[in-house]
Image 1 (spheres, rainbow, N blue to C red):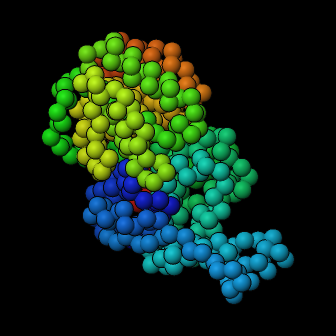
Image 2: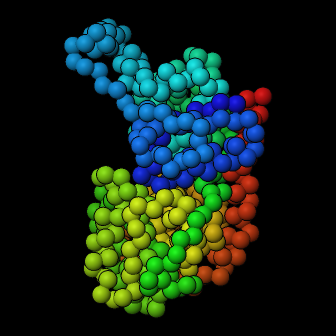
Image 3: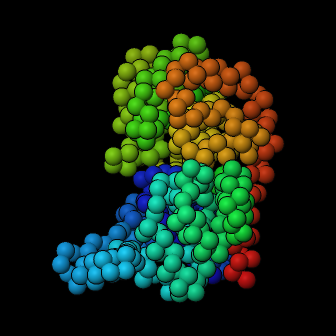
Length: 386
């Protein structure tokens, strides 16, 4: 079976790296003849993914003004109100690879949470036009993200694998019959335990992840996050490990966390993890934390999968759905509007500390089942291809 993963923006987002890394591993573990190829918008960031069988440049191509392609695309749009020719040229680097594989996996778990995606819609249409299997792999989509155009695109998938029950239930309610429930493959990802940095307290270090994405969506949230850090330092004797998880230009956790570090480093109880670690190395640190507070979904998955009590600075259905599947409720997940309220952040942190042992017991019961659900995605994939 030859598989092409696409809709991947690059591994400077360690969550994207985690999806590719863990998905490749579980597919190859259960499908012995599988060959996995990756189409990446930033292939130079993916060289660390040594188990994939090939990495292709899938960056978007430009159409030069007044070129033949530009004239054809303009004519098609003006006369027929269609943009399929232009989109096909823009996404040509992916489209040309379709003929060489059996299955195309759209792996951007939350790509459909960010408005219309006409480029992906066109790629999907070309996949089906060539008679290949099309799978949406480990997705999360909110009802507020849905549109008629998006629903029409989702109908053409041979298989949609949702990573939590909120998305699963919503898509079924829209009349889709090609939907199965699994879990994010990153729950199964290995970890690499590097030496602990100076100042780390074994058994008493709290991870803290905050992102520019959350800050842009709620500008007051940074002040509330700062107040939460101060509360942790005043009410506990723990060390705080500031933990980046996305280091892409314009969306770099390390930059905003470094500002927090400079502000609190005089306490002697705050450290900043390096900004150049890979996903399994960050997971190795997160696994050894007592608590974790995170805005990035795959950083919180790294915590959950190692039974670390976790508070989520959530901003979409994925964080809510994952928590609900683990705890039976949206436990310790704050909505985007809540994370600018310092009092709510402090109260949730105090709740996490009070319920530490109960949270660990619940995760020890439920997370093994979640990991099994991750593997179920491969079973569905095999059934589809057979």
